[in-house]
Length: 76
Image (cartoon, rainbow, N blue to C red):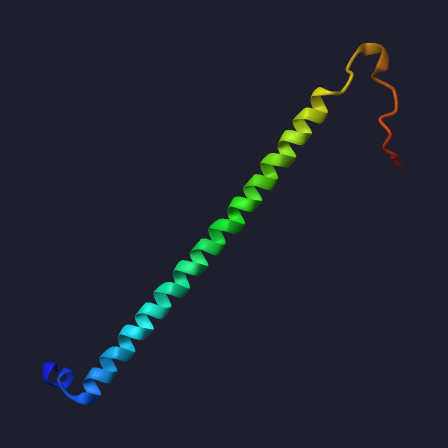
């Protein structure tokens, strides 16, 4: 087995295996970073929407005499 590594064909085989391992590790690292970036963007968007919803909910006038006023949304 080790004698194959010392032949010219064996050296090229080892270099090919090393190249495949390096390229696959780079691919999976880039893929993991892209997934993390997409998840971070989705989380930031969800937090931004939640903050806007909370602010809009806090701005609602909930006094008893205005409960039945129209909120501007048309419903069937």
